[in-house]
Image (cartoon, rainbow over all chains, first blue to last red; front, top):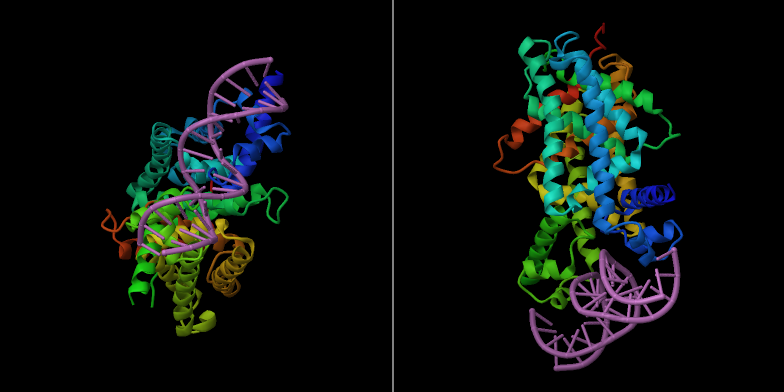
Length: 201
Length: 201
DNA sequence: CCTACCGATCGGTAGG
DNA sequence: CCTACCGATCGGTAGG
């Protein structure tokens, strides 16, 4: 298991560096230095720099998908508890995945463009399928009248961008705890799509 | 004015390339090729690659500030029309600046980290001052009871991230027009902070 | 996991 | 705005 541990350490270091300096702003020597080996020695553990990025992005994509799967397993189609509860659960799950590993989440959100074409296309497809869960839940809310008359695609993009913005400032041991953020962001998200527009002067 | 025009063309090309590939993913040769000159010839017009990035980021920062200035000139402190109207105006202004020049806005949002330390610090300060306007407006709303009991800092970060997410997908001539996005995003933002939390099962 | 090395490309300068 | 060129660094390989 030494190999597995070493590889893990390399991906941890790469996540931190990609998070801070971006994929293109990080050299393989930077990663190697962080785990105290020579630059060329890195290739005893990884096939390429792309390979490391792919590992990080793919694992994180799977974690987002698994979290949403768990939510929908409890109430597919939002039939029992309704779209409001479903949306809150999806938002909480998303915040959870982000705050649980902010560095990998940040790389997932910002550096997936650095993937080569085939892998980038794969992630683009999965991101869209993931976002579609939010769109579907919002659409149910709009159709049943529980939510305001909002474009589900616009609202989903708005909400997910709002939450993903966490990667720019969230720090464990920061002023606001992860559960508090999840609570606040769930409230903001639900209210954003709920109710009707207030009269304006 | 030939010089000015050439410089502008270089910044336009750089904005498009930085938007698509990032600052570190773009070489000075890439920029030069886009304006049909030799790589080294670029230095007849710009001092450095950093210089080009700084121009783009600084101009865009100023456009965001000017747009918010215009809003607050109409109602400083949100005393006349109230924090709801003020927030809607700020959101609309922000969406306007983003959609008016999506490439420069994207560079401003994503590539300011590539600035050298002094300039990055400058932009960081100005970004915080800009975000503080949203925080202040939300705080007024919370204090007067017009808004829900929400942490103004969290809500402001949430809203601005939501809107900035536009740079990832907005395209002129896309499915939704810029004014329609501004309208929808203003509604989502106002509702997010307004009213009280609904009872949950 | 190391040393030694590769060709390619990087941002930038000199001199016209 | 060009040609010619610079040292530094890039991701990666060979061979142990």
